[in-house]
Image 1 (cartoon, helix red, strand yellow):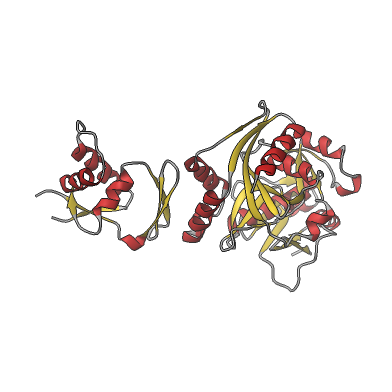
Image 2 (cartoon, chains in turn purple, orange):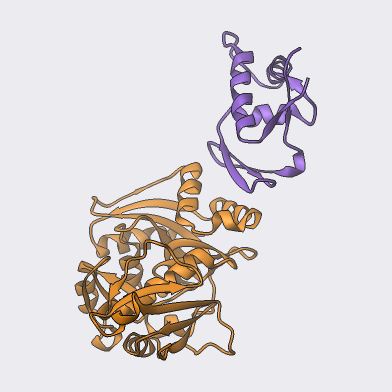
Length: 94
Length: 289
C-alpha cells in the first residue's frame, strides 16, 4: 500500500512570506522554519487530508506550471521526507 | 559570611541589584550612573553578584567571579581592577539570558525626528562606536548594545546603559566628550582595552521614551563606502542570530520580528570613517517617508 502523508494542522502553523522564502512558525514545537520552493506549495496543496506523493504531485500539476520533463513524484517524495523530519508532515499509518 | 555591599540601578525598563564583596566597583558604578533615576521600590528584574572566586581571594590578589540570576559557566574571573567591567558584563548577561518583556536584539540605536535608526552586526562592525559618535552629532542615544523591540507596539525601547568603548574608540571619543563623562580605563581586559562613557544627559532623561524603528543598518567598518540592499530571508536570519531571546519568546517573538522585517527598510553599509558613515546615513534618512 502506498504511503500517505498528512500536513500539520492549519492552526498549528503561522505562515509568513519573505521575498525569496516562506517562514513557517510551528506552534507545537515553537520552531521557526524557513522553507524554499516547492516545500510551501506542497504543504499548501495537502490541505487536511492524507495524500500520497503521486496525489500531491497531481495537485501541484493542476495548480502550478510545472516543467514537463521533471520527476515531480520523486521530488515531492524527497521533500515529504524532509518535512516529516521537521515535524511539519506526518506519515499516516497504512 | 563577610559583609556584602549593594546598589540598585535602573536602565530603561530594567532594574538591577548589584551585590559585591568589594565597595570599589560599586562606588565607580554609582558615580557613572548618578544621572540615572533610582529604581522605585524593592523589586528588581535581576541581581548581579561580584564575589571572590575563592573566599581567601577577597584580599589576596582579589579576583572577581561574576554571578547572578543567569550565568555562563565559562565566564572567566576578572582582576578586581576590572570589577566595573565585571558588573557591566553581568548586567548584559542577565539581559541577554533573562529578559522576556521585549524581543532583545544585539544592536545599537539612536533617534532623530521621533524615529529610530537601528544598527546591528557582529563584534567589530562598529555599531557601538557609531551610536556613540552619532549621539554627539545631533542624534538621541538609545543604546549601544541592546535594542528592545516591543512585542505589541513594534517600537524600540531605549536601553541606554554606559557606552562601552573598546580600543581605538576610546581615543576617538576622548577627543569629543568631556573627561568627567568617562570611567576608569581598563587595559588588556578579556575584551581588550575598555573605558566606559556616560551617555549624553538627554539620552538618560528620555530613556523611557520609545521610538518607531525607521531604518535598520548592517554596518561593516573598514571597507570602501557602499550601501547594498539585502534580501528579506537573509535579514530575518541575521536578526534571529542577533537576538538572544527570539526562541524563548515563541509566537510573540515570531510576530514581532516578522513585522519588523516587513516594515523597516534595511541596508548593508560599508564605511571607513565616521564622517563617511554619517554622510551615508544622512542620505538614507532624508529619503525616509
